[in-house]
Image (cartoon, rainbow, N blue to C red; front, top):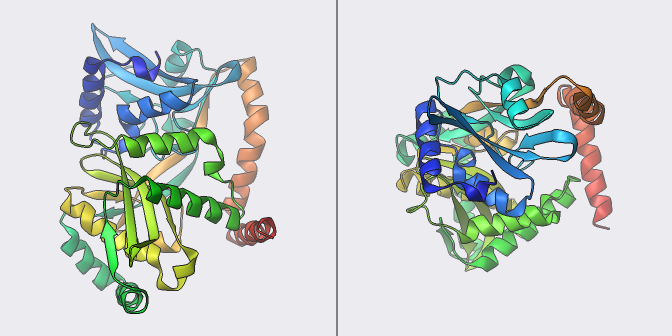
Amino acid sequence: MRPGELDADQIERWRELRALSGAPANPFMEPEFTRAVGRVRPGARVAIVEGQGETVGFFPYERGPLGQGRAIGFGVSDSQGPVLSPEHTLTAGELLRGCSLASWEFDNLEAGQTLFVPDATEEFDSPVIDIGQGYEAYEAALRAGSPKFFRTTTAKERRLARQAGEVRFVFDERDPAALRTLMEWKSAQYRRTGRRDRFAKEWIRALVRQLAADRTADRKPGCSGVLSVLYVADRPVAAHFGLRSRTVLSCWFPAYDTDFAKYSPGLILHLRMAEAAAGAGIGLLDLGRGTAEYKNALKTGDLRVHEGASVRRGPRAALYRLGREPSRRAHSFVRNRPRLAGYAQRALKQVGRLRDR
């Protein structure tokens, strides 16, 4: 069925099955995210798995041409996979066949998804900040493990206040203008670094606007948008839009005003965000797949996510391999060779500089 056709009982059952999984309550795995994607992606579907008179699973996916499937929100979703009862007896092939899919591609498959993990071609760290013991405990660990980083960042915040004006942080900002500013900064960052601008796609812009407008975490505990903004003298200098459940904040789109780059406003924002999130009862900030200096400095540990595809035998599977595997292998070849990856990074930045001329 289409995601919007899920009724209240099915949504409640989805939540029950997620709780049984024992996995962190990542908002990307909740029904609200799937329903939001369904409003902007016409190929979005949810398969309902039934056994012995009850619903034992849900499988959100997007269907493309020739039966090629992808994870729901592929390209922007940071946690993916079916929601299944621990007692299910399905195989990956049976699930795909039931959905008339020749393949199902994923780039952030959740750890513990035993149905599809055997089909993964690569595994990645997804850095996290554990604030389950409160922000004070996290700050104490940060002071002990990265004392120079913490001192430098807090000193920059004090200098920012002295030189530019009062520093103010809003954890859940409702001003639409702040969201527009963040999206403009993020688009500029993508172009500056030579990367694909996600906000050039209308469906991604529409998805973010929708999730930002529908912030009802009290009524919808699974997934709600949160826009956090760092202001200096009432001017926004850094912002982040992410998704939260009651216990997990998934960091999604952070960006900052490059005019204030010397103060590292993005790092200040993340520390303030961790403090506010802990105060709101959140126990984990998921910084998302990928390595970055700021993630390494802030993290307390890592989750694991997987990339790959499950492919059924047949002619349409061969078409999938011809269309996707060469590109996937090329990216993997570069990623796994640090020197070559460094050359690629510098080349991307050069492309970004040329774009801005």
